[in-house]
Amino acid sequence: MTIALRKTMDGVIEAIESKDVDLLLNYFADDAVLFDPHFPVSNMEGKSLIRCGYSWAFLSVKELCISIEREFNSSDGQSGVFELRTKYRSQTGKQQTFFQMFMLEMESEKISRLQVYTPCAPKNNFRLFLGASRLIKRLFKKDVEAGTPVYLK
Image 1 (cartoon, rainbow, N blue to C red):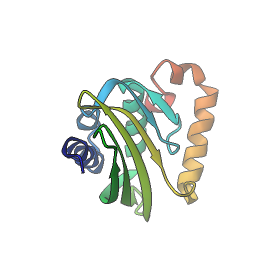
Image 2 (image 1 turned 135 degrees about the vertical axis):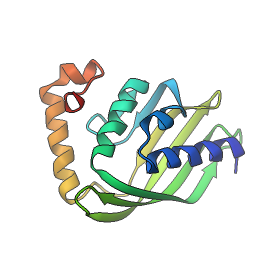
Image 3 (image 1 turned 135 degrees about the horizontal axis):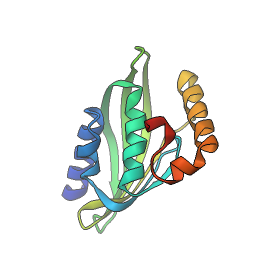
C-alpha cells in the first residue's frame, strides 16, 4: 500500500459519503479527468465538469457507505485500483449494494485521472433517470459543453 495514494482514496470516500463536492474537488488537479458511465456526461475534464457530475449524482442519494475491499498499487505509488463495496440508499428509500472499481492516477499529490467502473449496467429506476439525463444532454448539448449542464441550472 502506498500511503499517499491510500490517504487520497480515504479522503475521496469520505467526501463522497458526506456528499461534499467542495471537499471532493480538493483531491483533484484543476485539469483532472473523470470517467464514470453512471453520469450523464461520462467523460468529464476539469473541475467544473467534475463538480457538475457529482452535484448531479448526489441529487438522488440519501446515504452512501463505501468500504475498500481490495487495492492494487503501482510500484511508483502514483496509481492504483481500488475495489469498493458501495451501499446506497436513494432519496426514495431504495437500497442497493454493489461493487465498483476506481482506477486512480495522481500527479503532484492530486488526482489527475479517475475512472469508475461497475461489473454491470445501472438497474431499475436509475437506468431510467440516467437515460433521461443523457437525452437532456443531447437536446441541450451546447449548455453541457459550456460547463453548465441544463439539469443544474
